[in-house]
Image (cartoon, rainbow, N blue to C red):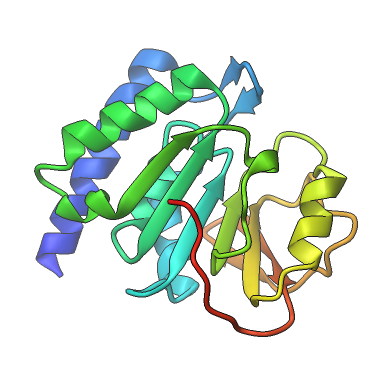
Length: 190
């Protein structure tokens, strides 16, 4: 476990230094960026049972911290539309990869998640700063593969998805929304 603790400290320290430099909450080309804490993200990933063989995707991944943390446990993708935040995520991955080799399992994509194929992920994560796009909700409803959407906070709620249990990590609520109807295989662009 010491290895994991040391790796998490490396990730935590990297983002703490970034937050001191760039600020924690800031405006972007796609809205407001406010991060989920590294320790909260890891505790959530453990509570969700992320493990080898699973696929995780952070929608609007910002500076990449949640997608990178998830890569400690499984394959992970972070999708961020803002080029500057995406560049920070790539920098973090590059700087941390030497001491946290699991980060090689994280793919960071600079694109709009509303246009991405989300059908192959087991767990989707978002810390929304706006209403959910109806097209994304409809796509998630029509999935053939079962999965879970996890929303940090309970401010911007999906309108079409059925709310599941709330997972509390410290004082932060992470609201779950079950997705799809049946387990199925399949590949998706990483």
